[in-house]
Length: 145
Image (cartoon, rainbow, N blue to C red; front, side, top):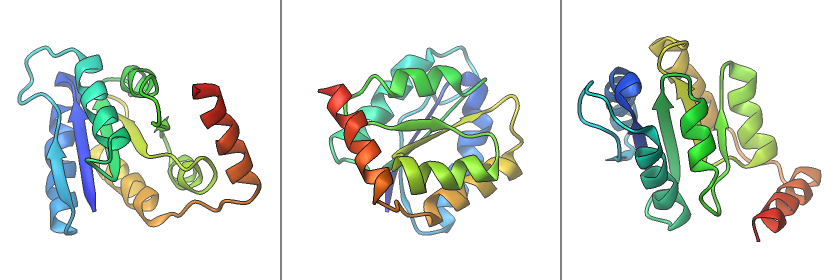
């Protein structure tokens, strides 16, 4: 699977570990984030990941900033992106099953890397259930239009 990953300076360490983990799982990872811990503007990297997903360059996206909030807000401005900030296992699995999220967001400051990778694994292993959830996602898509 093609996965775009992005980060600001506060998500840099998580990005490195997540990229290694994703590549070890056989995924093609596209790095859209900053390359060090020097100050970086999270909207730039959220836009790059969002566009990659929306344009079909990547199947899914992963974003990390200090709180996870900024990247999720910015990515959700891209038409076709359904980015979800996840803080626990249930959120990670449910957002794929019920919201058909295509970008997952994490806090580099408040989520340790082991928990973030575990949530990422759950998210990747979950599938959209459709049905009544499909009707709701369709309504979200209508709002974008």
